[in-house]
Image 1: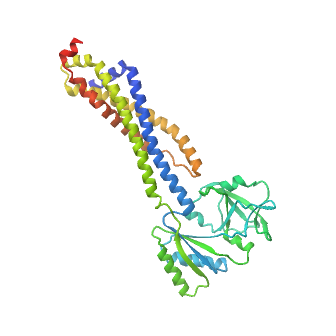
Image 2: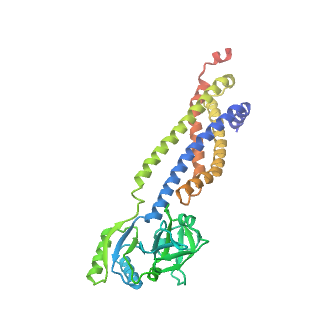
Image 3: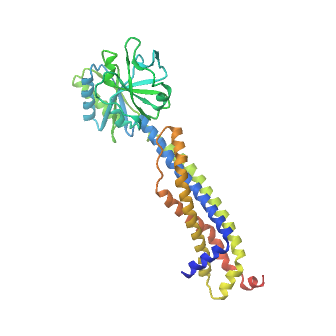
Length: 381
């Protein structure tokens, strides 16, 4: 308690120095926490966008041709899931002849995908408004738009779906964030038969933690041997999460180097302040030596002062990061078109650890120098 009281007295006696140390520490911590936050945001942003556009690891798709009805498609999907390690299965179809119409003109810039509602289980599009596709029947096609399509189309006007020969007015039921920067619309695959008499080439999408294309090829071969009235093509992986890991790791290392350099700058700055303080307080320390203070006592007081300042700086930096994090990360997420991650509580712990270690390293030399000068030399000055 005595050392703590002496430390507080020393800090009150030099308010400008204390304020400079707190400011330097705070800026250094904010820089380091910003690097950690940026790395976490980047990893989550890239992962989210990869999952939205290609599915989670592992996701594969296989092209089919010759499927004549929705019932046969559903049975095929069930067979493929049962004969592979897939846990989720969906189907999509794209036809250049069927598209979205804005009034009486085709919206050629809006891509249209017919999909089973289960597609959102594999590619979990965040709902911005409304609802996702469902299997319920309706008089008008129920359309879901991504953010780019919603911004492009005048949903207050008539929005339709179909071909130049067969066109139906559609109802926009929802808006999703699908990771696609281009306008995109989704419609239930069953609605495709409103415009064409039979199904075109359908893509079956499979997802599972241990899914491999060879198993899909084996399932397709088995179905062919059982006399399936359709053809399954080659399977191909669509997920990109694993492939992006090395790129993310390289960028994270670069950011970590920048954060370390920021900390090194902070240590040097506080070290200079500490050396100046040690020289300015040499008479005080000499007096304490004459009163029997040991090297450990004097060094401990200096170190304790630095840790008090570090704690104050950590509180300031944590509060600042909590306020600034949603603003910075929110704008980052908006630019990437993904849902930004929340502020993690462990960032505050990192702030405290970084402040404590940085303050300790930067005051270690001044702490021992405060005792090292010759007593007679100090008393003469």
